[in-house]
Image 1 (spheres, rainbow, N blue to C red):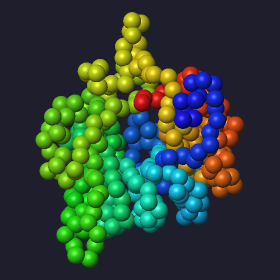
Image 2 (cartoon, rainbow, N blue to C red):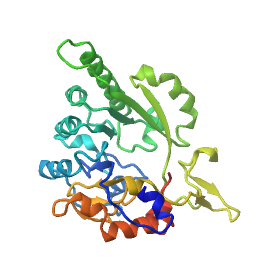
Image 3 (cartoon, one colour):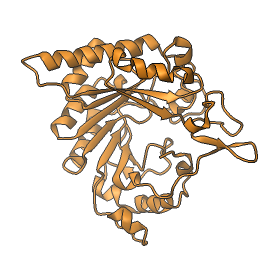
Image 4 (tube, rainbow, N blue to C red):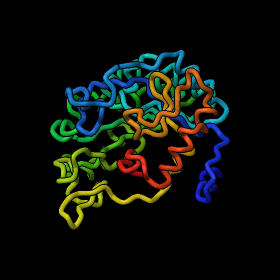
Length: 314
């Protein structure tokens, strides 16, 4: 309702977020060329220099503030969630609070023990990022990663899911194992093969996703050859531009991102924390979600004024 009323000039917010993305870790093992953390790992200016993991104190504050109002909890933002050893416990507590839980991972830190812990935690969906079926196509984007580890992760998860489903002592697992593939020029010749193999690899679902790229104005070597599968289109000036987006963004009315230290951000595109509403460790979520900074950002976002809105692809 508040989103609809904004079209008539009202900026009133009287609710807490319906979904929250938390950042278990802001560190990662890889050097992906379109990720601020990956760029930081190469020595280039990145998202944040300080490497952190979300503490259980911050996590419990988050959970207490959104319990009873939010429906969905996503455990990912900029870093690799599995590097936080407390992740299974966080998921278990979110699950017990009635939240639908999602994790997205590069799977490099997945082990049999971690897969079993995630399945037993009550996790609803896990997204495994695997952008190639050969080492050459996979490492074109996931620099420093191992394709074999991705395949092993899918196998571990499938086995853990089957074990819990068939055990008389454990509740049937409803976890959805999703294989996510970025549409890149390096793997476009494998898209059809992905559709044939994803279930054999151990996934329940296959999702293709367009890729965000930096320095795309003059084209990019990872940009798909078919512009239909790219976020960028070539203009009459010969340069590439981000596809035109519709105005307004329901996501900043319905959810937010919470960093490792408790900063509350409007969305996942605020990678440098430029538009933070405040910190949940010293202010109640309901106050943060409707404060002056939040209202100002939403009003600006409705007209696509903030720079991060120009980078977004809904």
